[in-house]
Length: 201
Image (tube, rainbow, N blue to C red; front, side, top):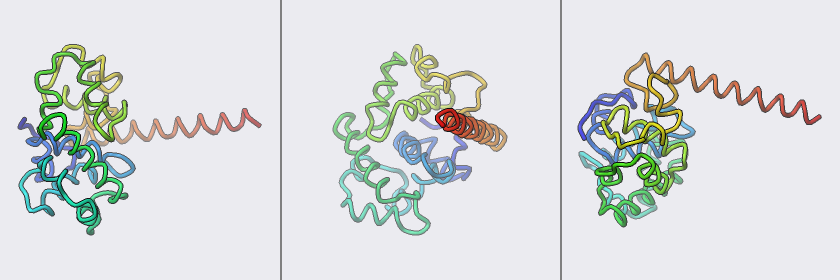
C-alpha cells in the first residue's frame, strides 16, 4: 500500500496514511466528533510522539494505558476526547494482534468478497456499520482494494462520483463538496426532528 491520500490536508500526515494500513484505520477510528483533517492527522502525531516513523499494532497494544492516554492528551490533543480514543486505539491494535498478527493490511488482503470484507471491518473495535462502509469505500475508490461486490457492500458510500465521505476526498475541491453534503444532511436531519416535534404536539 503506497498511494497519495489527501485526508489530513498535511503532506507528512497524508504520506503516512497512504503507506500505512494501520495509520489509515486509526485515522478512520478518530474520524468522529472532530474535523476530518484533525482526525486523519492523528496517526502522524501519535507516531511522532512515540518516536517512530510508522504505527505498529504490537507496540501500541503493549503501551501502558495511562501513558498512552497522556500521550494523546498532550497539546495539541489528538482528539477532542483523547482519553477514550486512546482506549479505542489500543483495543483496535490488540484486536489486530490477536486476529491478524498485528498486520492491519491482512484485514482486507486476499479477501475476494465485498460482503466478507465489510463483515471484517465491522468486527473491528470502534467500527460500526457506517464507519465500516466508509472505510470499504475508501479502500475501493482510492487504495485499489476492490473485491467482488465492494460497491454494493459499501452502500451509498460506494457510489461513483458521489461526495458523501472521506472516501471521495482527493483534494480541496472534493473536500468542499463533501463538507457541503454533510451540512445538507445535518440540516435535513434537524428539519426532520423539528417536524417530528411539531407533529407530536
